Image (tube, rainbow, N blue to C red; front, side, top):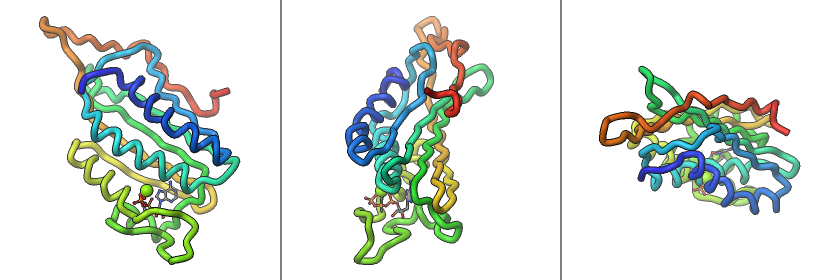
Length: 182
Ligand code: ATP
Ligand code: MG
C-alpha cells in the first residue's frame, strides 16, 4: 500500500483509545511528522505488528499508566528508508531473565492458570516473524515495575513521480520529546 504513514498510525492508535480510556490509561501518539508524505509500506503487516504491540502495552499497564507511541523517519543517503517507532509503557515490566523469551511462541511470563492477563502467548512471535519478513528490526527493554519499551524499525519506500523526483520532504520534521507534550 501507498499512503500517509502518519495518518495510518494515528488511525491504529485511535482504535485503542476507548480500551485505554476504560482502563484509565493515557494513550498518546507522537507520529506527527509535521507535513504529510506518501510512502509505500505494507499496511497489512504494519497493522498486525502495531495492533499486537499496542494491545500488549495496554493489557500490561494498569490504571493511571501511560502508553506512548513515538515515530520518526530514518534517513540513509538522503532518503527516508525506515520509520523508527518507540512504544513506551509504564506497565508491569518484564524481568531480565524472561526478556530473551518474550518473542518465543506461546511464551508468557505468567502462564499459570490463575494468571491475571488473558492471551495465548502468540502475539509477539507473530510480530517478530512479520518484522523479519519486512526486513525490519525489533528490540525490547524493560524494568520490572517501571515499564517496557519496544524499539521497532520498519522499512518504507519513498514514493517517486514519473520524473523520478521524490515527493517526500521530511525537512519540516522535528521529533517531539515526550517531556514536551502537554
Ligand atoms: P496473545 O498476544 O497471544 O494474546 P500474550 O499477550 O500473553 O498473548 P505475547 O503478546 O506474545 O502474548 O507476549 C508474550 C508475553 O510477554 C506476555 O504474556 C507477557 O508476559 C510479556 N509481555 C509482552 N508485552 C508486554 C508488555 N508491554 N509489558 C509487560 N509484559 C509484556
Ligand atoms: Mg499479546
